[in-house]
Structures are given as structure tokens and as C-alpha cells.
Length: 98
Image (cartoon, rainbow, N blue to C red; front, side, top):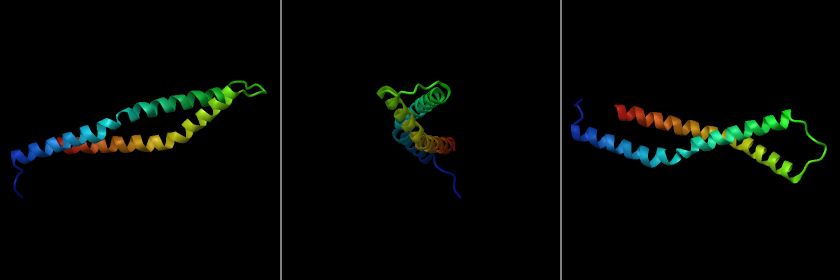
């Protein structure tokens, strides 16, 4: 098999770099969203399970419980998205290195 030409290697490198900029980098905030959701869920869950609850619930408590439950339901989806994004990023990085 013939060795790849310099032009082909440059073209391949530029295509992989552009793919990374246009596909991977726009989803960068997903890591922060995942981190924020995880922290919110853990703090809320700890507060609900460890704190003494009064007999009466207020509207604010109901909204907080709903928000914590929503964060808990979003975590599996966000985990899958973050893991997929990380795997794609590593694959592109490996391809770029050669």
C-alpha cells in the first residue's frame, strides 16, 4: 500500500479539526449542565432525606420537590449524552493524532 501524500494528510487533519469545531465544541456546555444538574439533585435529595419535614407542605416545597424529581429524571439522559460526547471527542482526537 502506498504512503499517504502530504496533501492528503493535511486535508484529513483539517477535516477532522473542522468536524471537532462544528460537532463537538457546540455541545461543550453539556458538561456544565450535567454537573449543575447532578449537584442540584444531590443537594436537594440530601436536604429532603436528611432534613426534618414539617407536617405542612407549602407551594415552594412542592415546586422544589418537583424540580428535584425532574433533575433526577434528567440525569440518566444527560449521563448518556455526556458519555457519547466524550467517546466521540476521544475518537476524533485519536484519528487526528494518526
